[in-house]
Image 1 (cartoon, helix red, strand yellow):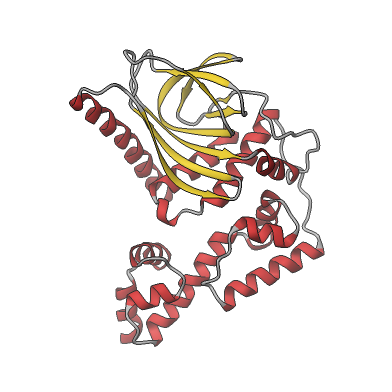
Image 2: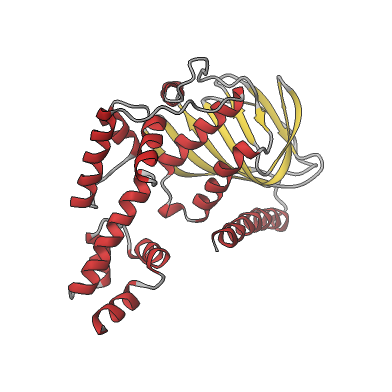
Length: 306
């Protein structure tokens, strides 16, 4: 079911790219790259970039202004940089350092779509520090990473997040993508270090706080800072101990609380969702149905009729 869902998401992403290209042709407009902001935090941001350029469009030299990782999700394009010319396809990463120049063209096809993660140097250094590999530096040696097994999970997670942007935990994904790129850039795997007693204590405190009040704002960066870890190190330790990411853990705590209230309280579905920490009823309905297999209303009806 999950694999089928991911396939549907990828089909929708490709269809969205094709629709943008058709609209460009209907308007008789030149190709363009339109960036839609998805999320941002302290030292990182994410944008959805839909490009409708083709063989007839002019090529410009561009410059990376921040550390950048472009996750290619559909289409193809040619990329020219100091490393030469490469064909970028779905599943590959486009890497950039501040000041690096590059050109992208569509000599043989029209359109592509990427999710671009941008980082401050300090933020990427913080992620690199959590990889337990002293030789890793927060500056990319390569300008692209081809579609390989090492990238597949991050690419799939990015596609899923793009398919449900309102419910995505972009902070966690930004850290995962950064760690994946830094490790793949030098061909290393992170050294597994068991969490220390202090880290276990901090994570236990965070878990208990989420259970007491699932409406708390549990952003990855803040949790990691409180534990004295880099975001990647905290994320890895949390998953090692709990089998879930902080976002997944908090989401399920919210959904459990909502399920109990639906079965025991006359409050409206909207009130239950909002009081459980969800920003709007649409996200609440989607998350609840994915977790319990039925809508909140159907869940309440079954629970109260038993």
